[in-house]
Image (cartoon, rainbow, N blue to C red):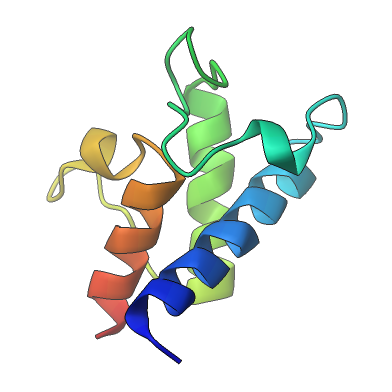
Length: 92
């Protein structure tokens, strides 16, 4: 499988994970694009509690930890694309 296919698959997994753990029942997966802002008002408008829940889910599912003290967490949480890139960088 190519890297692009792996990234696309991971983005789809992250999309489903976020919808499930945050109970975003009123949002369809198609509404969350790979580059949709996760925390800004022109995107999903998630908050810090949502970020914490996503972080816990990422640790459980992908065994990666986003440490606010040592990493540029805000950059990684920009979109599904940036989250996927971070996860892939930690797994390689």
